[in-house]
Image (cartoon, rainbow, N blue to C red; front, side, top):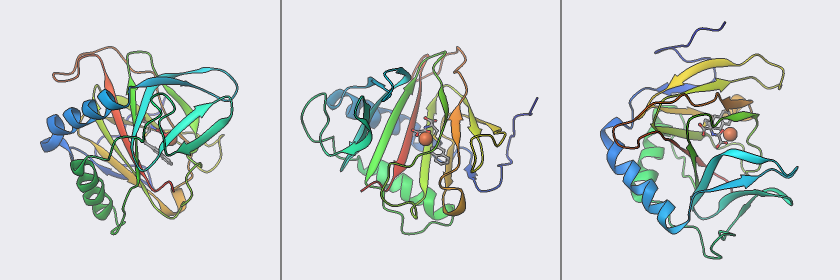
Length: 207
Ligand code: MD3
Ligand code: FE
């Protein structure tokens, strides 16, 4: 068994424990505002399987998945409207975290919001639908803790495990931008603000 890592991050990943904790409530409120305008929905893979996390987006485009494939779209297919604007607080936080991780000048154009309930997971995958792999990705965890799986360049590379708590931020880019990664099934629990839910925000340069 691989032990969880507390305070130590696997190579190629910058782990900023509690970086967003002071803004936790405001970030949750802003994410729920986004979800009020662009509802969280469970997408299907191109192969026709339902994902287990629900998702939505804000920013200049949104990540969508359906029978036609994975891609970024400027309009929300569910509402037909543009995705909600990225909250200013999101932009500030993502830029501050990226700078802390050595990626000064990062300016995300998309934020993907994932909602996990107990049992939901995300299988090992690469994020390769973005136009610009030179930009990093910044991830903010809110609500229930989750075990993040951090693999390597190949699907078969054994993933390290890192428990992410509410307010934790991770950032990576450069040589590890295309690493495989995933999320182990969420364990039951209650978070003071979100209840039995984990939200994850990932900031990308997609267009
Ligand atoms: C490492 N989300 O939305 S965020 C995703 O917790 C996604 O919801 C997970 O994977 C979540 O695509 C993990 C952390 C993450 C995101 C993208 C990465 C780690 C990454 C891309 C490359 C390497
Ligand atoms: Fe991903």
